[in-house]
Amino acid sequence: MNDEFFNIGRPKDNLTQVYSREVITDYVNHLIEEGTPFTFALVDIDNFKYVNDTFGHIAGDKILKTVANRLIKLIGSIGTVARFGGDEFILVFPRLIDYDAVWTTCRSIMMFMNNFEISDFEGLFVTLTIGLARFPENAKTYDDVFETADKALYRGKMKGRNCFVIYLPEKHAHIDLKNSNAKTISSMQLHSHVFAMLTTGPSLGEGVFALFNYFSSYLMIDHLCIQSLPDNPDGGNKIYFEKTHELSRNQSFLPINLLQLADATDKAMGLFYTNNVEHLEEAGKIDLLGEYRAQQIQSACAVEVSICGTLYGILRAESTSVRIWQRGDLDILVTTARTLAILLHERNLTLKDL
Image (cartoon, rainbow, N blue to C red; front, top):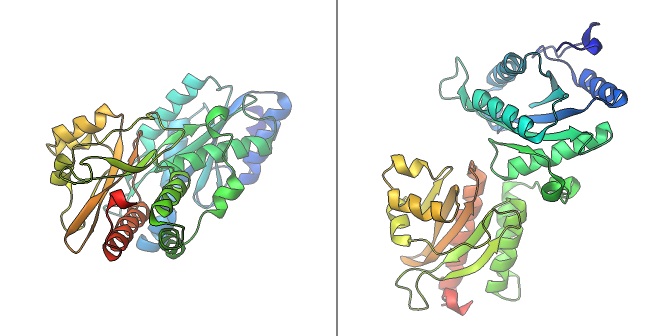
């Protein structure tokens, strides 16, 4: 980066050889004092803790160094790369604030950086999530710039990671990072929470509504519902307990053809999911792809609400953007579907009874 701020020696991170957190903080404050507009990006390596736990810290260090080297190569003279700490990096682009220009730059970063394989570790691929904010449009101080970028990053993580989000106040100002961080609970607690909401409320139906509202916020899922079966005597292909996120591009979802969905479902698990519905074309599921395209659905998960050979309906979870369904997302949706089926069976109820 050709900037007078860097003409004197500045300390770098020992592992990655990009600038340190202290340097980038001073640089951002320098730009703010000079009144120089800039874009600030928080870069997070997806599922880094899982990689460390699975492949070891040697692989983790190799990922950090590889990501840093690729960012330096890509950013070149248009920006500065720093390591914030852990698996997070910061990018600063002085004088780059036009939304379309920022979007184009980020798109190039994602195309170059995402889903590349780490050498010496076959099958280890890396994806990134990026949250961006602009000075002075979104914030006036370093703390404000960081917080707005962090809100955009949080939104990207809740969308399923492997994406970038540019902060827009009308979409992201309402995000409460303190409350959002407090929602990060263990898998065991989350599964217990599902059981409690379905069993301790005034009624099972109200429990499902409350749970879907919770998932909509916690998991940032655009659309949740339970769809009855085509031959259900209570009303085939009817949608129950629908929750649509306020930021969803589509606010009016319709039943889908469950016969086509059944053909794509794993019979042993009673589960279907796709991170990108366009992949259905390669799998020969053209009709199902058409169903999703018609509703602007880009990624989808469907779980059978079934127990003891009785299928009550299908739990649908969908997004209008590409989403990387994490193992935890799938686990909690399967738990919800199975718990609901058990309760329906034990109480001799149908979806219509709720």
